[in-house]
Image (cartoon, rainbow, N blue to C red; front, side, top):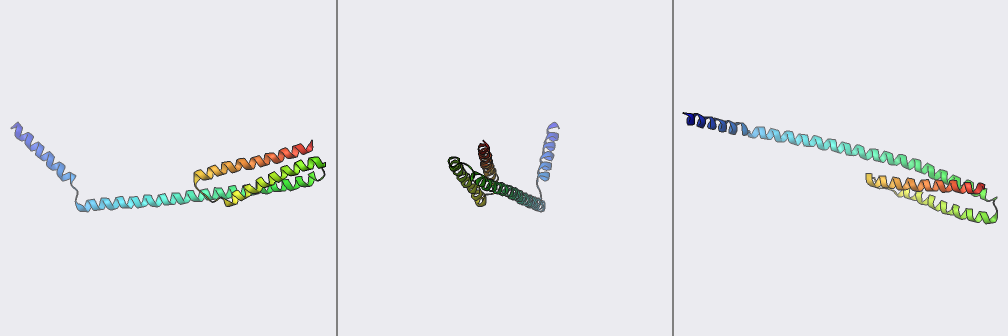
Length: 153
């Protein structure tokens, strides 16, 4: 009797497992369509996020470019002003200042060219470019300030 009850319980359990585990083809198709739709939605969201990130990076680059162009113009103006001031200096000092100014003009024009030619918008490359460019821009600014301080002495 115990064996019969146990045997029936095992058969009922197995039948229940088989029946609940099997899905009809309509259910499988519906599940597959749901998964495809979810994947399409995820893809759409990812494309939108990527587009938004690209636009933000482009906006940041444009802002950085405007600010850098303003700094370059300021440097150019400072160089022109300093050239007019060194015209009044002694000949031996004038040659030294003119040499330094020519070097600063070249560096400034090189930075302007780098900024105009920069096209890569990848985040890592952009950050590296921005860091290097800002450093070079600051160095020119410091050199101009140091040059004017030396002129006052």
